[in-house]
Length: 131
Image (tube, rainbow, N blue to C red):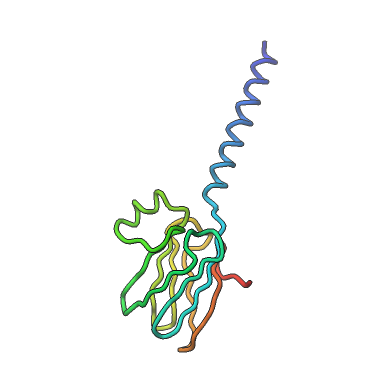
């Protein structure tokens, strides 16, 4: 009888472990996009992991744009985060661009400058990436 209980406990433990691993895998959503920026416009080109292939916008001082794997979004970002695989904001700063991850990445903040020049930078789940 003790063997049966021990065996059932073992199988339940394995079942919970597999379910926990599956839920963690869902939170990690691989993606890659290219940021192209000049002094006027920002373009994001989705390489994989997003429904969009290109997003383009201009940002003035103190303006922020948010986007998910589905495209640009507005409204309650907490509510949007509940259904998004990733949620990222971008803002133009005096030094360049600042990206903030609200969900779905291994990074929290990414910033890079282009020195007044046009620049290109790949971004993925882990941060700045080469291609």
